[in-house]
Amino acid sequence: MLGIGLVAGILALGNVTMVSAQPLSIMDEVETTADYAEDTSYSLLRGNHLNLGSVKIQKVSSNEIAIYGLTQGHHTCDTVYLYLYLERKVNGSYGTYKSWKFEANNVTSLSRTLDVAVPSGTYYRVRGYHAAKDGTIKESTIMRISGV
Image 1 (cartoon, rainbow, N blue to C red):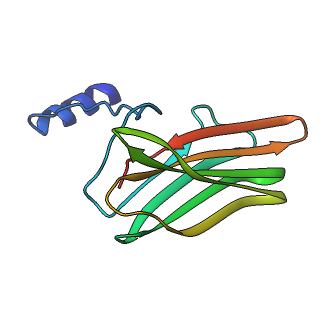
Image 2: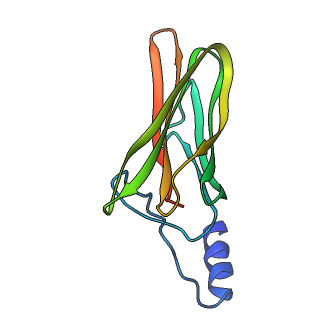
């Protein structure tokens, strides 16, 4: 009965379009006209240690950007990892422009905000590697956001 009521309720709404979101491939080269881009990645399967990873890039001025990364665990982990890669678009392709690696022991989360001076006139994006290790088990995720 509950299923029939749910279907009847959806049909009562009129035209309903189902949309399936497709995650961006690490190889996709997507830009935005906005001054910022951000995204959060959760493990496909709920992990025991790693909860989520998040990255953000924001245009501060024509030659400065701010990048942010967060790795969040479910509990205090032996080691939490946050690797940030600033990528620059040159001749139609992105490549690593600068990178930073942060690790912390006996913490639940690790975050960093960086202000970076950059040459103007091109797109930049951020790729993040997020991991949490407890004992011998290390869970990780990689994500990349649109270029600004």
